[in-house]
Amino acid sequence: MRRYQAELPTSVLAGADVALVGLFSAKDREFLAKLDVLADAVESHGGRVVSRHVQRRGVSHGGAARMAVSFSRRTLLSPGKAGEIAQACRAADVGVAVFVNPLTDHQRAVLGRLFGCIVISGEDFPVPGR
Image 1 (cartoon, helix red, strand yellow):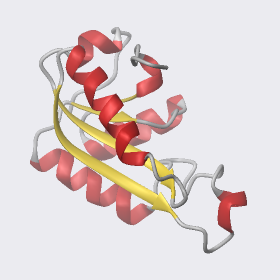
Image 2: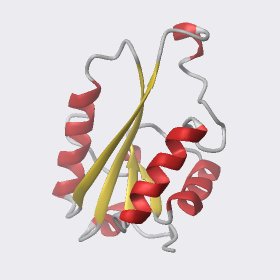
Image 3: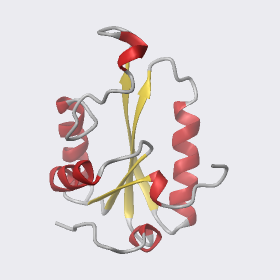
């Protein structure tokens, strides 16, 4: 398993197969555009996007007021979605998973072990238009 080290994220992306991941509100109609912007940034740093994974947070079960609270403090995602993405990352031998959302160091570590790859956030490297 590859681990995140004190490398610049841009050097981590160079030549890597990359999975994009994002947690979005069900009200967010721009989520695909946000993934496209992130994909462009990854590709401009030498990564190759091989998959995209989206977790939508609906308006039920607490609504928009709960959107700021992640499904899991450990993974940001629901357990089912985290497992689904982990399986896809391992099957595709993904080198880096890049989240649209900001991540804590703990989330990066947990997700890295689960996904079997380096996990970073789009906030870790320059994204055009941001």
